[in-house]
Length: 67
Image (cartoon, rainbow, N blue to C red; front, top):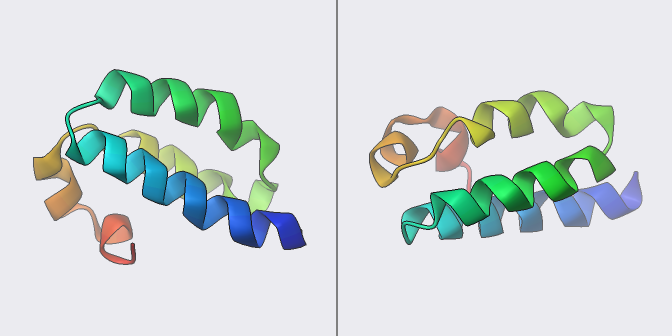
């Protein structure tokens, strides 16, 4: 659990950085590869986040505001 508290924000930040820079395909691949390694506690947020694939969606998504 302790490692998840570090990995979760790093994964989210990197995902959003890729999406922001128009690398949605790479962001999706990274999310698919690493999200399963985090605790169940984070899975709902990661699933919601994985639906964000454009800058416009980032601006509209409440979850991205926390990052």
